[in-house]
Amino acid sequence: MENNSIEKKYNIWIIILSIVIPVAVAVLFIVKLKDLG
Image (cartoon, rainbow, N blue to C red; front, side, top):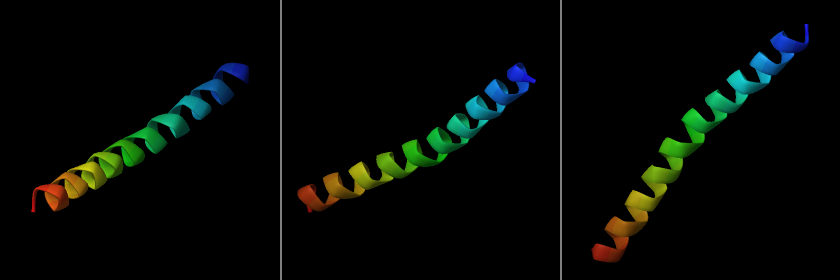
């Protein structure tokens, strides 16, 4: 049971990171484009 709960927590964090990181990169990219523009 404990192993399953730990795996679920890791899966949730992987999903969160997989969503947050690309969004953060996109935001930084847009900000840099605005600065250059």
